[in-house]
Length: 126
Image: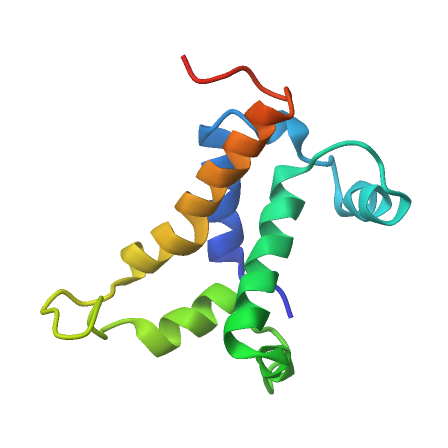
């Protein structure tokens, strides 16, 4: 179970576009060490990953982790269900991949960026 490469790359691009890439752990081993040992650093990529999984499990339950292929991307899972459905009941506007990526990725990284500003990790927006 993991976020697919396409969505992982989009997360990294959004983080980079917000000027937060320098806060990302250098590798997976360091990221796990930071989580396990409670290092005082804030890693926006790991924060996003955990928030996405939290949202997915709250929305779909633990069965999202039991997909037969074992490689369930929670964003892809959500898109399989919602793409092509009305944005809201009675609306002619339909949900698209772009709309859902905005929900799952862009808005989340905007929130994480604001947290980084609050924590003094990056300067406030100019």
